[in-house]
Image (tube, rainbow, N blue to C red; front, top):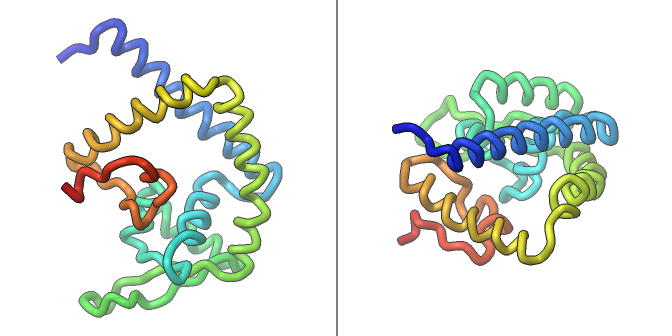
Length: 173
């Protein structure tokens, strides 16, 4: 199946926007906090998790990473004292490992978050009015359940309550 010209335009625009946003946020985080965007995503996800701990397998999904990249990032962050590996509380697999955010890591997230939010505001939301924002949320409201129905693993409402605020998780139906 071939994309229509309008679909092709939207798809390419979305991909370009996504890549530019990721790159710009990476630059901002490196400059202001000494973190990569992927490190920030790991620390951020851990900061919102119960007991500041997530199993490595689940963290792969939540941090939008690959197992080998995540393992390398955790090793680097562990060396800096931001996280530590702990035995998973899930007794079904004795080899399972979780990652726990340390106080130093939590302090880093707290320090980085305001400037990161300001950059997101500058890059995206300064260009949108209230109607645009409502429309963007409407599109996301349709695409997230569709992707979930196709089998993509999304953060649950418990894992990302802010993203799901006002949205219906199709897995609950």
